[in-house]
Length: 82
Image 1 (tube, rainbow, N blue to C red):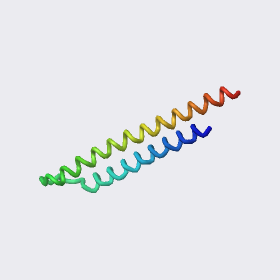
Image 2 (cartoon, rainbow, N blue to C red):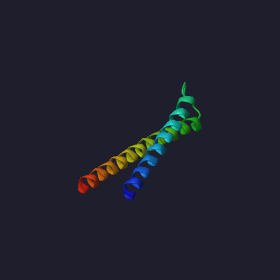
Image 3 (tube, rainbow, N blue to C red):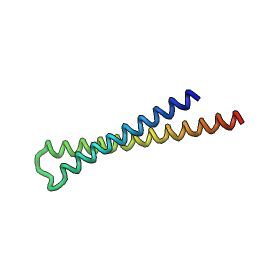
Image 4 (tube, rainbow, N blue to C red):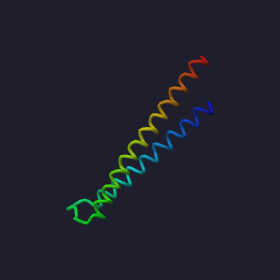
């Protein structure tokens, strides 16, 4: 059971990290909304936040898949014990 608990913890941690990254990037993008200035630094910042948004999305998906795998492992262990 310890393996499943550590898998669940790792998956939950990855999911929460991804969710936090998405929230931060979305907030930064929203605060920079409006007319896009011709300033290349502002454009670079928005671009970086879009990248962080996508990285957060992938991190959350990986975490969800790890949680799903841990759930399947737990189900298999329970079936094996029964």
